[in-house]
Image (cartoon, rainbow, N blue to C red; front, top):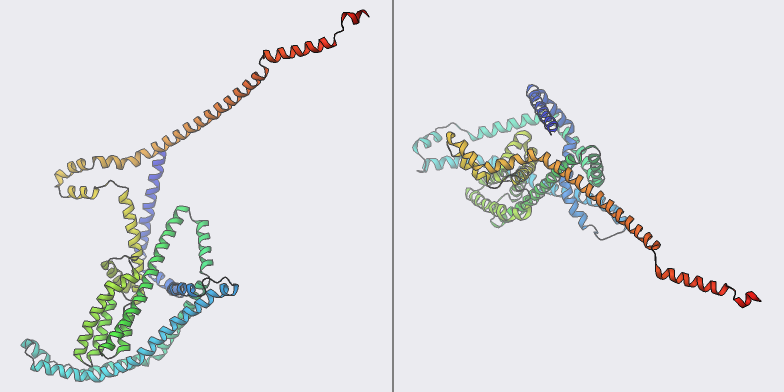
Amino acid sequence: MRKRSTRLFVRNWLQVILIIGAIALLVIYLSEFLVLLNRLFFVLRPIIFGSLIALILNILLVKVEALYFPNSKRTLVCKSRRIVSILISVLLVLAVISLIIGLVVPQLFQSINIIANGLPKTYNDFLSWVETSDALPEALRERILTSDFDIGSLISQFTSEAEDWVGDAVALAGRIVSEVVDLIFSLIFALYILANKEKLMSQLKRVAYAYLPNKINISLSHILFVAYDNFVSFFGGQILSALVLGVLTAIGMVILRLPFVPVVASVVGITALIPILGAYIGNFVGVVLILTVSPFKALVFFVFLIVLQQIEGNLIYPKIVGDRVGLPAYWVLIAVILGGGFGGVFGILIAVPIVATIHYLFKEDVDARIQRKPAGGISKIMVAAREPLYNRQEMVDRLFVEDAAVDDLPISSTVENDQSIDNATMVDESIESTVENDQSAVSTAKDDQSIESTTKYDPIVESTTIEIQDEEYETKAPTDEESKS
């Protein structure tokens, strides 16, 4: 027992020293480590994006495979199911993207022209309203009217800067070509994963089973299962929810006779992929676009979209996603802020399922640890925490006297329990050997009894044998008359 505790103590301290050393090295070489991570991410970017694309396409692929002759056992159908399903999934995604681009891009250029032509008039109308309105304070009205803000010069400055950006066409073209090449490699890698996902999973399971201990393998597999469920639930729910919100926005804008239906509905649907902030971004863009036509219609759109988002968030989204992600709103906001700070839009999209996975695993571990502790401990701790320092120790001793005995039990009695189990096992083995010996002794005794019973004196058998022998002797013995003759 003492040797075991010493080994455990040394191992724990070695782990602490290694962790402290790793943290110290990370702090000392933090800038070099970040540069290395940036280079590694740049090199592995097609693989990372390809895996993410495969994960998103797999949601649609499973649905298509379930509809492609699910009950057919023909060889041609079984062999072509995966290839045809991948082709249909990719074509559906490309069709949706092409439809959005075809609807949005022309409307977007038209909206920019309308905004550029309508802003001066809107600004002049605003100045006229400031001059005639009594709703504003006098100081604010004077400051607005005396400002040298010129909307025409602002538009000219923006146009000149845009021309300067377009003028640097070589660098822009090089960056576009690099992004397109990375996208092509990502798509190829994603298609390869989808075509061979069962084989890849089997190989990963074999490698993990071969090189990892069973306990680590089970824990790592559980983490991957939880992460996969969270990623699928989040992306599938967000995409379907964004599609429903975009369609409902278009229908509502047509009914209310609002302008810029295709571009506003597309912007609302696309920004809905971003949790929490996407709703405000889409609403703001729509209000700004419609404001150039009519302030009243912009107000109508603002109220309509607020009501629609409440209906979608409270009724439609829970039915689509359910409670599988189960991340509270403040954790979603933290994930969006951290993901946006580290990786922009891509970081926002992957931060929420990552944080949801960490939250689920942490909650699971907390629940497991609480179940191993005595009931009512939290309330006892809160009672003891309210006591002053001079009276706290007495309160702790009084409240946790039974819990201390229970907490000490696993440390001190584990070895004793192990020894008792070993002793019980030895006793059971001795009992089994004794029973076996007894059984062998009983069988031997039965054999001896059977032998004794076979050799035991039986007067009936003996008298019968003597009578038979006498009869044979009498039949064989000559009479006196025969002997005389």
